[in-house]
Length: 447
Ligand SMILES: [Zn+2]
Image 1 (cartoon, protein in one colour):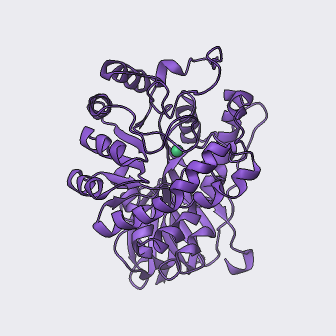
Image 2 (image 1 turned 30 degrees about the horizontal axis):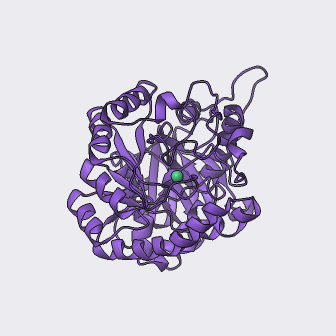
Image 3 (image 1 turned 90 degrees about the horizontal axis):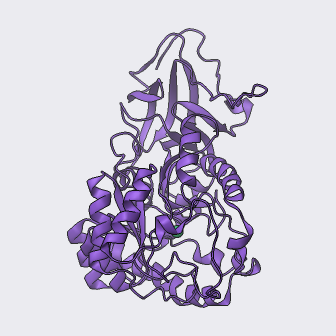
């Protein structure tokens, strides 16, 4: 390795977030050129590490990735010594609810938190998620249009957090997974803007209108509910919601605007309806059958299966007053979902990493990796599902999900060996986003 003079002094420090009185937070600025010395690199593709690599970063992007034996560190560059670490692309979770907290499960919880409280949740959860190594999330379902505002605040540097692919509220049929069910008919959710204007829709024309209304307010992705759910009242997870025609209307409008359609579907029929209608991903996929697996392969539809959170729903969430109906549904579904995930993975369905964070605590996203490996993926496949494959699903393969010249400099480092034990990703030592060190827990003496 050819080092410019004086650069052995390491400058890796936690970048402070400066605040001036009366002004918005000043976003941290990256140094002009940063060079990362990675002991081992998993670049987001393939099945193995490259050893001893220099990654050069300029203006928030990766400029070069070279063997340390031939690469050089330019004069004035900041060198970050991660020679004792495994470096990987920043992780991507394709199914989060940043504005939701995992200790609010009683039936009346939705009447207790205002959109402002949801916003505060989002600020805290965004930071926790970023520090867990997730530099991008796709947020699929939050009050209108909180995820868009959070995305914009993070992009402007006001708040630390992952880059957000933002949806609006999940579009739902009357009485469906996204509706307010089984309260007295006099009970209405008064909100401003009126959520119903953006999510409750029946018939292809209303679905089109809701999707267009969401696009008007800047969403990056459309979420639609194609089956019942676990945490909604009075609907069966296995029951289809929406016809193929209604779902197709959503897919057409989303695709015409260059957006993806994420379809929540537990039941076998709901899954097939959504795939036939042109959904880009099936969220949950719990009761998928052989025909559904074949259809997903034919259509190239991604499976985003939240196979970790069953442990939390049937554990801590019960202490937080998870209603009996939801407990019963999760008991019926949790293990089946894991077994069906294994079948789908074995059959070659495309898998993208998504956890439903918010149903369980934000920041624990990486706990799902071990379950994905337990249920049939290799560690490399599981990691790709949260890097290059996730980037593919969200339409960002050209700028994230891999460590390659031209891409955003979103990287993490872990002390363990995730290809040997994928749970190593649960402890992330260093997080770099757009070339800025946003977390570094490496003891000073070891830097
Ligand atoms: Zn969800």
